[in-house]
Amino acid sequence: MVTATPLEEELSRLAGSVPDPELPVLTLEDLGVLKGVRVEGPGRVTVELTPTYTGCPAVEAMASDIERILHDHGVAEVSVVTVLSPAWSTDDISDEGRRKLAEFGIAPPRPQRQPDGPVSLTLAIRCPHCGSTDTELLSRFSSTACKSLRRCATCREPFDHFKEL
Image 1 (cartoon, rainbow, N blue to C red):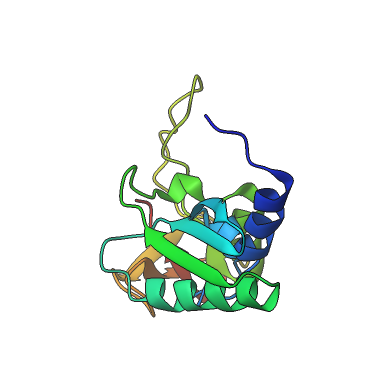
Image 2: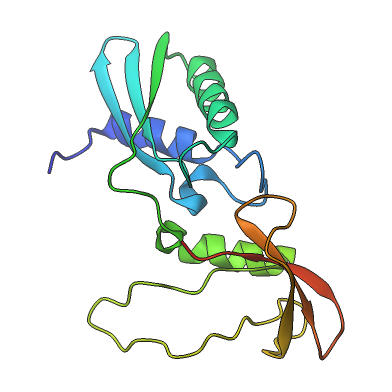
């Protein structure tokens, strides 16, 4: 594994601060789609981005926003490349990203990978408004393909759930 230079770390921080175009409450760092930033030469940078799913329409907007922020900070040539392997997973969402989703009223995805830990047996989706697990599926798709629409039986509020992948 190659260690990032201080410049690469700073450029990664800038690129990671870009809001997700579909969920602007999250940054690309929160979402876990920013995989790396490499300085290729003076004024030349390559950014690796993994889409949440193949064909995600937000990738073009993400790439454009990354290019803009890095150009604004003096990088002349920015190349954003799509990396499909390893595939993105909802486990890539940071703890801060999960907190932001819940605070925004979207139930975060349940963790799928439990390294060296117990396997979760619950299938319940917790309401981001009242915390109840008594929720029901209204639609498998919501405003974006990565979310479903649910309703809490306790507080009766509808909410989006970021689906696990």
